Amino acid sequence: MPIRPVANALGACVVRSPKLQNELISLLAPQVEQRLADRSSSLKGMTIEAILSISHQGKSKLLAAEIAVAVNVIAKAHGERLEFKPENIGRALKNLGLFTRRLGKYGRGLVVDQATLIRVHELAAVYGGVGLEQDENNLRCPLCIQNK
Image (cartoon, rainbow, N blue to C red; front, side, top):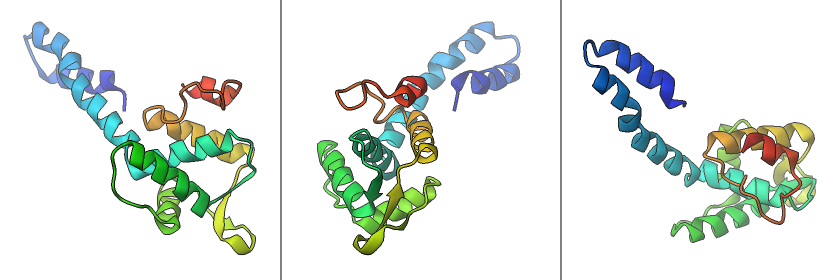
């Protein structure tokens, strides 16, 4: 959520105190930054980061189990002790508006088509830019550059 409209709405309520009105953005900024940090380290944020990482490798299908392995690596790097299962990832994907389908005998997952890639990149921007950092896997990804 952009901070400026919130600060403007709150500032309109503060009458005869231009100093306080000007300080609202700086007062709200730490909460916004904390919220973005919380979002990026949430299961949904880690799932988005994992999907981007795997899809930048050129895969056309991602099994929920494969995403779970990547999420667990990311979670461990964040200091988490939880182990996420494919079922957890499936629920997170559904909550993000990314719907899985049966991908043969190996289970459910995502088909990585253009619409899915666009949606995942948009979600990454909303979740604090998780997975959009420039690395050797996504240097030429126009969607990463566009959503950064």
